[in-house]
Every structure is written in structure tokens, then in C-alpha cells.
Image (cartoon, rainbow, N blue to C red; front, side, top):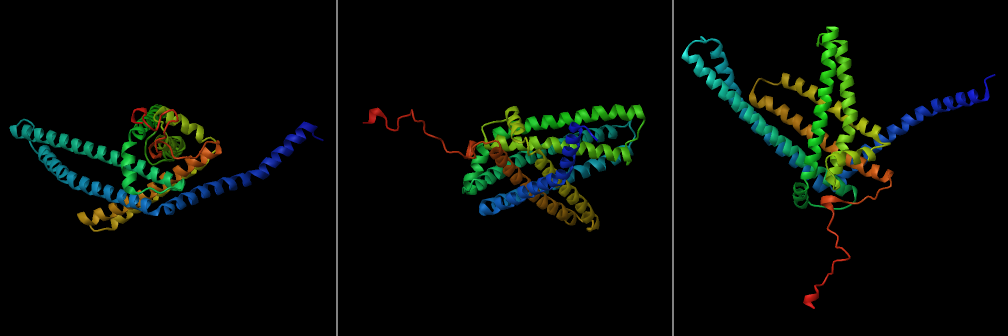
Length: 341
């Protein structure tokens, strides 16, 4: 016979094991409920949501086409000059002229790349702000037109920009730490970074950890848009709100990452099957951009829902704040000027 305490511990462990499948089933239902509620948001204010989605696709596709056609002549000229440079004697004047022209093309290439990186970053942050604001309005049962929404998104861009800056620093810190940890391990064990079991397991583990950390980062961006918080304060608030719901955000990130990976593999397959023509190569890229924008839109709506549900779980009031809240008149402020009486 077991002692009474051991019998109670054994019975409780058996009860936990019997309840564990039910807990996993409940977590799955919660996650599916999050996706279902995100799907409903689109139709509560369908005109504004569809307009923003279409605007995101059009603007990003336009930037993508301009980016491709701007870089193509620079890369072609750079490649031609590099081939001539390799075949020219390094002691002649022609070599010096080609080297100078090659340096100019390289600086021009970096400049154009930097301009488009800034353009894509600003566009992504602006439309993230607009889509999260639209999702919040839909979740609270309000109605807001695109003409009203876009200026408000522009006015409230400072807070998400500061939070995005901190998130970028955290992301760079994570990958720097990862590189600083993996590189000595590779040198000590004399490993080769090829397609091996070690490389695959290490990459999967790094992506999973990054996906788990990104739950707080993504929610912090929502907090900075819907509340008067930014930076470290928004990250701290997101960490408090996500307690008890982090697995749902983690599953959401995994689904989004898996969908993006499948989409990228599909794009590579379609691009190889297309004729080797410029227009034929751009069409799969534009389709990839369209589907990627839809996936991103779903992710932003889902994190908006997760934000409000987390607030409800922690007993906080559900209301439109920040750039969506009308200014409240103070009770101490007189409505009529005394001099006008």
C-alpha cells in the first residue's frame, strides 16, 4: 500500500493526465475562435476594410514594380563593367576609369536600395497603423470611413514608429546573440554550415524561439496604436496583457509563418515554370505580394482581437483610445465665456 500522501499525488497526476487532452482541445478551440472573430471583423466594416486592403495591395505592388525597373539598368551596367574590369590589365588607365565607374554604380545601387527600404518600411508601418485602427473600430461596433481613417493613422504614426524602433533593436539583439552563440560552437566542434541535421534543427529552434518572442512585439505595436503608449512602455503593457494568452499568439505566428513559407515555395515553383521574360517573371511576384498582403492583414486583425480579448480577461475597459477617441471636455472648463454674458 502507498502512503496516503503518495496515493493523493498519484491520483492527482492521473487526473492531470486525463485532463491534458481536454486542455489541448480547449486551447485549439480558443485559437480557432480567435481566427473566427478576426474573420468577422472584415465584414462588420467591410467597405473600409476592403478599401484599406485594396489600397495596401496597389501601393505595395506599385513600389515593387518601380523597385524592379529602377534596379535592373543599374545591375546590368554594374555587371557589364565588372566583366570588362576582369578582362582589363590593372596597370592601364582604362582599368582606373572602369574602377571609378564601378564604384559610382555601386554607390548608386546602395542609394537606390536604401531609398526603397525606407519607402517600404514607411508604407508597411503606415498601413499597419491604418489596418489596426480599422480593426479596432470594427471590433467596437463603430463605423469610420477611409477618408477619416487614413489621416488619423498618419497623425498617430509617431507612437508605432518608436515602438517599431525598439522592436527592431530587440530583433537585431536576438540575432546577434544567436550568431555569437552559434559561431563559437561551429568553430569549436569544427562543424560545417551545410544542409545537415544540426543546421536544420538549429534553424528550426531559432525560428520557433523568435516566433514566441514576436508575440509580445506584435501586441506591443497594437498597444502603441490604440493607446497613448510607445516604446518600452508599450512592450511592458503588451507583456502584461498577453499573460494567459501567449499560446494563442504563438500558434497564430506559427500559422502565419507556415503560410508564408508555403507561399514562398509556391512562388519559386511557379517562377521556374514561367517563360524567361521580364513581364512573365513579374506576374508571380505580384501575385505573391497580393497574397502576402492578405496574410498580413489577417494577422493584424487577429492581433487586434487578441488585444481586446486580453484586456477583457484582465478586467480592463474596452473602449476606443488614442487617435480614435474624441476629445473629452473637462468638467472644470466653462462652456460659456463669462465675458460673453
